[in-house]
Length: 122
Image 1: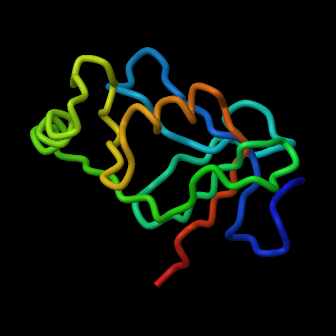
Image 2: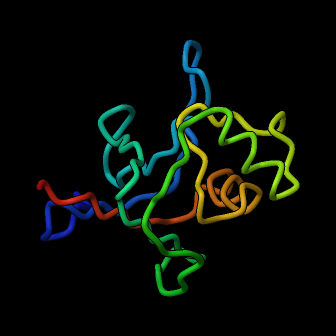
């Protein structure tokens, strides 16, 4: 099991999850040591995500608080402002406001190692 001592921290790899019936990509971290849906941890605004550039998890590629834009029109406006075509991405489950869409998609398509810190219950 790869949850750390802190039950709110999950070690795994980025997974751009999608299947028939979903209206876009469900951005997630798939937990190491778990199979299928049991390892799937969808990202939500407020989660802290750290993405590593190496399997040893020593080189941080990106780290930050997830901040998804969920409104379709605002997503389109954000993509146009960043000179990225809305047709090139399935953004139904959120578009990050704090990272270029091209970089976001590449991290997920490469299934980079990641650490997900879940938002603490209020």
